[in-house]
Image (cartoon, rainbow, N blue to C red; front, side):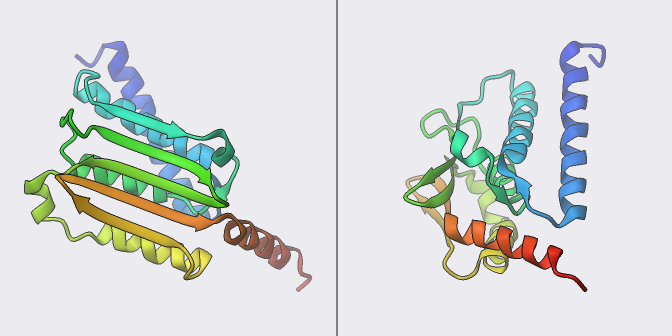
Length: 179
């Protein structure tokens, strides 16, 4: 039914996400992680609607990470990967999405059950893309671990906070230099 309130909300959530993706793509700038977390919440809401709100999803978005300015679409890509390649209905493993600050690092982590069928057809290009973009933005001392064990896929991305703030300051310096 397209006249249901859920359909209206789904369309609003979808258009907000599309706008966010286009803006993030065009600006090429750093964004507040909190903004991307908001979009991820909308994405989760849409998938929950499709599955009658029955997906076993736990998100852990720390307040400390919300204000961090970061390259866009890393978190979003990891979460999209879950829905694209994961077995989202697996209640044993469930779905876990975390963005936190830990030991002077920004840590983005996802965990989900593997979908064997979709897994075989995956090129892992999304994951390669994430690693390349992070190295380009923050240098080689970033950590991207994508592991499979016991039917689960885990992604852990960690970036030293000083690399993140260093990039932000460098960018500001470049902007304020007189030509």
